[in-house]
Image 1 (tube, rainbow, N blue to C red):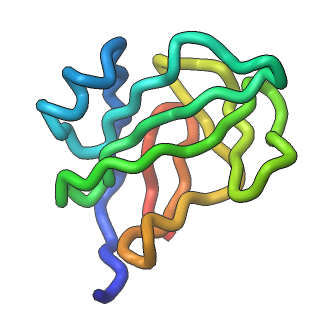
Image 2 (tube, rainbow, N blue to C red; image 1 turned 30 degrees about the vertical axis):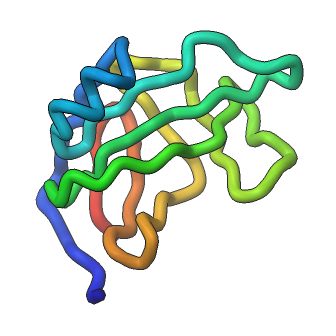
Length: 104
């Protein structure tokens, strides 16, 4: 499968993972309600290309968890930023910065 390039896509926040899973809005995100004892959470996203694939990311609010792979999240649900970049299974590669997904 070749890598898909997209125009910028605004991230849409869902407060309920089940609603996100049903809606499959490109670039949508949801976040696990509570961090674990190490402060780790899961951020679920729907691929920004529009294919409808969902995937979880291990994130830390203000830090990158020690486990790999993992991402640092700025803690914002309205304008989320994740670092480093997200490589969706060799399908879509890009960044989520200030609430906007951008292809590499």
